[in-house]
Image 1: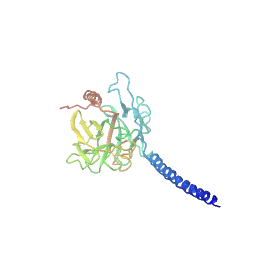
Image 2 (image 1 turned 30 degrees about the horizontal axis):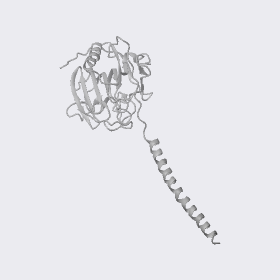
Image 3 (image 1 turned 90 degrees about the horizontal axis):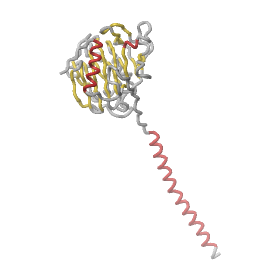
Image 4 (image 1 turned 135 degrees about the horizontal axis):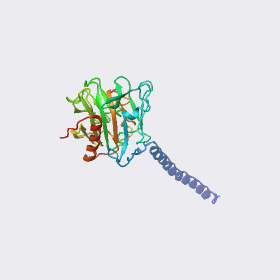
Length: 292
């Protein structure tokens, strides 16, 4: 018996030591599982969008084009004078579609200098593009539009384009919060004054975006320059699509007027490039550039 007792004690001690050694891996396993779960639920980085380079001899700067829509092109798919789809063969796989199939803007030929326009009636018509102008997908970019408004009233609110989900995301249009200017841009913090729009007047607008700044040109004239902005950089910080004829599905703010052409670059333009696209559109739609 004097030999059996030490042996039993050894067995007991070995068992206790084994239980203690098993506890440490259990804690490690739990920690690893928690870490893995957090990684799996973290939002994936947004993928950059594809731009195209136009052929040599293009009337506008060739590289970095994200979208190019001319209302003349929408005539091909229009039915009974209504826009069914809007796209340009030069920028493949990019289009604008009606948000609701029974709420279609009109296609009006020969409306501005013998060119067509897409006409929104300000009630319920809006188009959704399949590109994203939020900083997560387009940190820097240039949005060029040719348009006119049937009204200069800042109320009700009306937006020419946007991707706003409620936090003053990138958008421009009529608004009564522009400190004396009826046409505004959203800076991520508020609606900031841009210029005083006149009804039934054609404008060539160039909006330049970077993560923290906004600059804009109206008919060739520098109108706002490097205004501080902050739209947020996460994929949840804006709607995932750019809308035309409104600011998006959160607030709508339907446009009342015409949109003749939209050109978007996934980059900033140089001064010479901006002048090139302004002059092309000015000549095309009969708008005089007034640079200063």
